[in-house]
Every structure is written in structure tokens, then in C-alpha cells.
Image 1 (cartoon, helix red, strand yellow):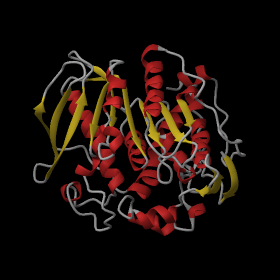
Image 2 (tube, helix red, strand yellow):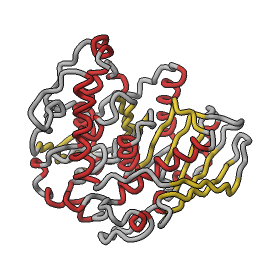
Image 3 (spheres, rainbow, N blue to C red):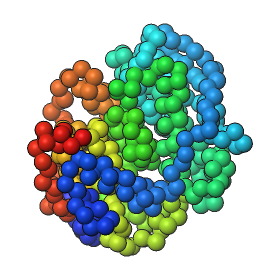
Image 4 (tube, one colour):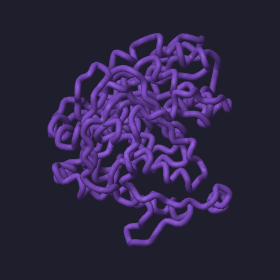
Length: 383
């Protein structure tokens, strides 16, 4: 991938400065700083935080625990007055569990209707849980925000991404209650808008031990402050998606106030390194394609490199991972293979392949302030 144009609109806001101007000096400081970030990177971007539900009812529709079979459950949850329901499809490794689990809300995409994907996981003893996030709120580009979860929590202001992320947590609630989930290894993943959702869901739900957005771009793993163009594998030149692009196309995904920063990205009090940093010290794994300039490859790298400074506090830099494959914007079997590698590293200590951590372009100069972390053993003493 050849970067042909690279414009930086401003430096990234400092992760390590409290709102009152104090500096983060330890893990204990960071845990306090983390709490401040929610009202900026989450509330300003995605809207009000949705509460835990008043209840969760799990209705079995099909229960098949044999390897390669599928158990299907209807989840009814939210408020007693205005419940919302959606269906989860659990691809079973066989046995009673609990199992390592992958949760993916992209059942609305054809890739998640591919039995080959499910087989990859169940053959390794991992349960794949898929659901259609559009059952929670519709994906209709409707700024009026009507239907389903919008009616359940009509007193709150939130976008579709926040609603879909809430669905990841409710799917996890269900498989925990069913005794199916091994909480030592829980992965959230998704493609494109589903990748934005998985990243947000992981930032909000600390039970996700691995968070894997695929090509999530603007409003996900990208960087609002970088505008770039690149030559893709077929020789065509493409640019990345911008804040103006995404808010014009999908006004219902985000908090309404985000529109105030169109063409003023440098004035945003956050960028997506803030969101990624909420995951530390858990595993953050970002995957991309070489022919997908629209998703902002340099943008994604820059916010990952900036957020990785937080992992240094914990001595866990190896928990920030990325890789690029050949091809276009999609969630391919190879992408799931790479996620499985990450899960097997966490479960069994298996080594990662050489495909990880290879940049397909020359790394640009950092646009963030680095943090000089204390020694890893010192960080541990501050926990």
C-alpha cells in the first residue's frame, strides 16, 4: 500500500493529562483517568450509556449440544414495561461447557451465514455466538431514532452503535446464565459498522478479554485528525472516510452533538486512541485489508500506537496487535483464523505467526505525546 497523501489536522489529545491538568504517573492514576474518558469519547461520540437491563429471560428455541450443532435462544430483556428481544445462534463445540466464546453481531452480513466460519471455531473447542444487531435497533439511517431499544429507553439519547454494543453484552449475559461461557476467554468481533460496534462494546464491557474490530475505520478504530489517500492493490487511488462522510451517510449511529465537529476535527476533545485505551490491559487486536483505504489504515495505526502507551503502564504492550491481509473490505476466513491464533495464545500460550505487527506502509511520525512508563514490576505494585 502506497500512501500518496497524508494530512494531519492536529495532534492527538493527551491521554495522560487529567481534566484538571494533573499528570498520570501510575496504574492507579490511570484507573482514575479512565473514568474521565467515558464522558468524552463515549458520551460525546455515541450518546448516553445504556443501563443494565431490569431482567433477562432466555427462551430456548433449539437446544443441540452435540459438536457442530446449533443451539438457538430468544433473549427478552430491557425494561419490564417495554422489553426488547433478539435471537442468538450458538454454534456448539460439543459437550456441556463452559467454552471459550466469540460473540459477533454481524448475522445481517452474508459472511456470518457461512458454515465454514463456524467450523473453524468449533473444531478448536470455541463457541461462536452470532446475532443480528439490527433486531435491537434498525439500521435505516433514520435520524428520528425510532423502534425497538429506542422505545425501551426513550428517556436517553443514544445512537445505533451504542444500542448494538449493548446487544453484545446482553448476548454474553445469556451464555453466562446458560453456563456456556468460559469467562477467561471472551472475544468480541465484527466487520465495518459491526467492527465499530465490537470496539465500543469491548470498551464498555470489561468481561470481553479480546476485542477484535475488523476494518472499523471512521468512528471505530480510525483517527478523525488524519486525512489520507493511498494506492490499493489494483492500482486505484482511494481516500479514507471522514467525519463529514460518515455523519452525512449514517446520522443515526452517533450522538447528535458530534455533528458540531464536522470540518473541525482538530477541536475534538478526544480521538479514538481514547476509546482503545479503555481496553487496557486486555487484548486489543485490529485487523485490516490492504485494498481498503476507506477504512483509514494509517489512521488506525496511529491511534493504536498512541493507545499502546497505556499498555506500557501495565507492562502489557504485547496485548496490542494488528495485521493486514491482501484483499478488500470483508470479514474473510483468514481474518477469523487470525482471531483464533490470538485466542489460542491467550488460552494455551501458543505463539503468533509472523503475519502480526507488519505494517504495509512506512510508519509516520507520531502525532501524540509518548508516556515514559515505570518498569513493568513497578506497574504491578501499583495495581
